[in-house]
Length: 133
Image 1 (tube, rainbow, N blue to C red):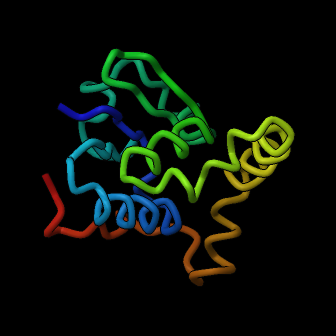
Image 2 (image 1 turned 135 degrees about the vertical axis):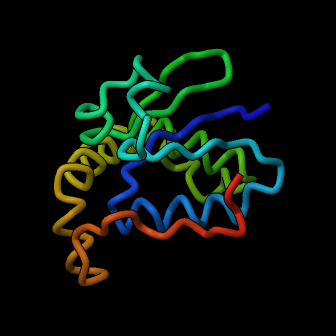
């Protein structure tokens, strides 16, 4: 059983790249990856507000608890054995600064993606097909 469901923007090249990286490391199948723009999403997840999930990353723990933003990132990278990569996100002083940085990134991710990848959006960004569940 998966320990976390991540609700991500499947049209965001940076978001898709992170999901691909997580999937490659997720040897225990601890995470379910749900594109908030996939057909039928709202019917399968009526408790997730898509516009809000587009603004701030949403996740759901196995017990049904919803988590948000960098808490999702921390949980995901911890589940794939890379807690040391994100441990700083839990440090008291850095946590507040990181949260502000995350809000900025989330708000401007399309512009940032355009600068980094040359592509602000894609119809449906590629998620590694050999990793599809």
